[in-house]
Image (cartoon, rainbow, N blue to C red; front, side):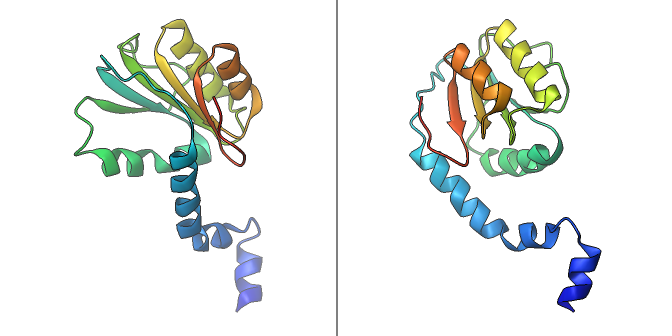
Length: 146
């Protein structure tokens, strides 16, 4: 039976699925340990932007916080952010690798519009941009500073 699963699942998705509870525990731990300072005063909306495999948790996160978040919470899966994004928008940009071109584009768009940004990645160009602009960042798969 195990050989049949391995043959039908060459990319190992079954392992990712079986490890999902452990991944959630790790994510909660990373979030609690992150030493970031966010200025949420005056925030009028939140935009979560990421694509591909990174986008899987969008609706889960939005659903989880639905009763707590009192401002519009929008998911973006495009190169460009919605028109309303500006200095009173909190934008969360995330890409596991930090090199997804769509997310990098949306991140640069957030910077241009002076939105308040939180970057989440293992590194890559997105982390470099985040550091250059002194934005809050959470590095996954490592320590969380800044």
